[in-house]
Image 1 (spheres, rainbow, N blue to C red):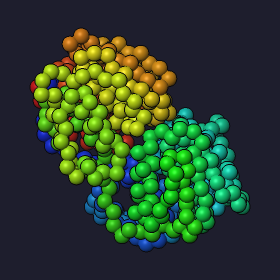
Image 2 (image 1 turned 45 degrees about the horizontal axis):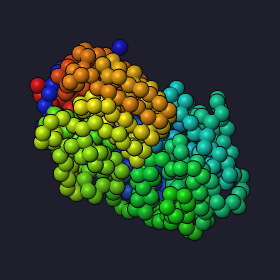
Image 3 (image 1 turned 180 degrees about the vertical axis):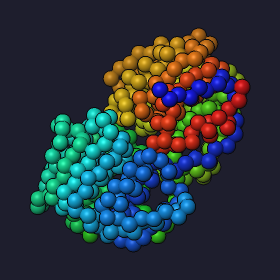
Image 4 (image 1 turned 135 degrees about the vertical axis):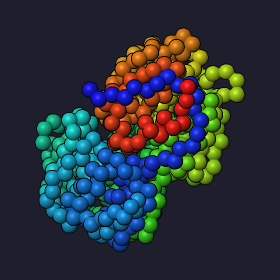
Length: 431
């Protein structure tokens, strides 16, 4: 197995310019493709997941070109021109969920598949919602999961679509992005508690940038207006990835700091910038500008133990599971059930790997209870498995700040969102 050995370190200090947000990159590409006009996209994330979306759009008949770090996307002004395509989408949830919704309304024949783990990630709630408006979707293998085969939709006059929100917010995101293709007013009702609300905020904000304003009644109902049409804003900049910022900000809180990240800040549309609010609760010192965030360790003593509801920042919350190793007591991460259906079962994976470092871990359906080893003396030379999950690899790099060498198995899985992560991490840490 390929691996990377990280040396023992204890200090973190420096500046990091963040790569573009995966969530924003793939949403922006899809909206640009569906729009009238050409869109120039700056700072698009260069990663495996975004490449899956780019490959899919090309197969669907969308013309795009790259000029250095600029991408020019020629919108098709509605449904995709290619009415027959087979798409491989890897393990990119930000690609397969919205593309399923859009393609269900494109009056074509499409097959969508991915890696084996993608075929274990649920999509049934989205398919059920799409069938309400006439979508014709077949499960190729197992009910409720990809791969999918999509056929031309039948006529539907329904004016309210209902969707569950307690498994993945990407189901609602897919519906929101797709329904303007119906060319008439239609509403969405969320029939259960909506998780990961900040990711829906990203969707609504980007749709508005492309000319479609969605009305809403809290988090329960959303309305698509009559005559909604996507129109290119001309150019758009992709924010830095706030989830990726969490590793460097946590390093500052653990390793002294200051560590500053550039690319996100007060003006960010990403909910994961709220990660720094959780670090402040632990005693970290935080400062912020419109496009930067800086974190230092507490002025006195160690970080405080915590008991936090982290439903609003599910991806960045993973970082706090490793930060728990550097606190003075028992920590609990609550309301994280969505971890179960991510790139891996992140609750089970996190519990398994934390135990390798000497932590006591209790795993529940939607929580982790973590007690760090005495004096945060981690088990040296632990070999951390990453489960083909980029966030597992990046989170556990932080354990090296306890002064213990650590091995990361399959480190190249970070290519999903942050191909040069370990080089960036090495640049800010020292013994």
